[in-house]
Image 1 (cartoon, rainbow, N blue to C red):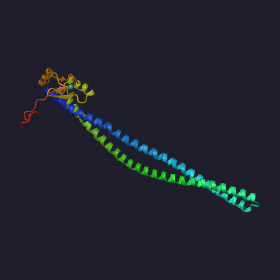
Image 2: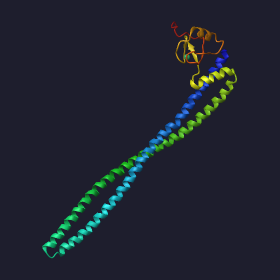
Image 3: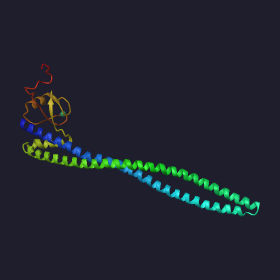
Amino acid sequence: MQRAIEDLSELQKIDLEVFRIDTQRRELPDKLADLKTHLDRIYGIIDRERKQLAEDDKYLAELQQEVLLQNELLTKSKGKMAQARNEREVNAAQREIDMIKGAIQVREKEILQLLETVETLKKSIGAKEEQFRELQEGFQTREAETKRQIDQLDSEREAHVAQRAAIEKRVPRETLSLYDRIRRRKPQAMVEVIGGNCQGCHLQIPPQIYNEVQRGERVLQCPNCTRIIYWRPVAKNQPAENDRSA
Ligand SMILES: [Zn+2]
C-alpha cells in the first residue's frame, strides 16, 4: 500500500507539472494576441488619420485653385474699372472687385486654418508611426520568445509524459483509474492528511477514517472532497510541528 501511495505521489508530481505546462502553454499565445490587438488598433488610427490627411490635402488644393481663379477674375474686374466710361460703370466694377476680394479673403482664411489642421495631423501620424514601429519591434521579439518558450514547454511535457508512462505501470489499475477520475475535476487529486485535516478541502476527517488512513492498508478518499488521502508519519529526525524544545 505504502508503495502505491509513493508511486501515486510521484505520478501526481508529474501531472501537476504537466498541468502547469498546459496552463502556461495556453496563456502564452493569449498574451501575444493582446499585443497584436493593441498593434492593430494603433494601425487603425494611423490609417484613419492618413485618409483624413489625404482628404484635407485634396481640399486644400481645391481652395488654392479657387483663389487662383478669383485672382484672375479680379484682374479682369480691375481692367473693367480702368475702362469704365461713366460713374455707373465705375460703381459696377467696384462692386465686383469688392465681392471678389471678399471671396478671396474667406478662402485664404480657410486655407490658413486647413494648413494648421494638416500640420497637426502630420505630427500626430508621425508620433503614432514611431509608436507603432517600437511596438512592432517589441511584438516581433515577443513572438520569437513565445515560440522558443512553447518549444521548450513542449519538450518538457514530452519528457514528463514518458516518465509518467513508466510509473503508471507500477500503480494498480483500479487505483490509477480512481486517481485519474478525480484528477479530471481536481488537479491535486491526492492529498495528505495532517493532524486529522484533509489538505485538499481543509475539513476534519472522521476519526474512524483517520485511524484507517494512518494504518495505510488501503486506498481511502476524503468523504467530503473525494480526493485520495494519505498519511505520513512524522520522521524521527524531524521535530514535530508543535515541538519547540529544539
Ligand atoms: Zn477533503
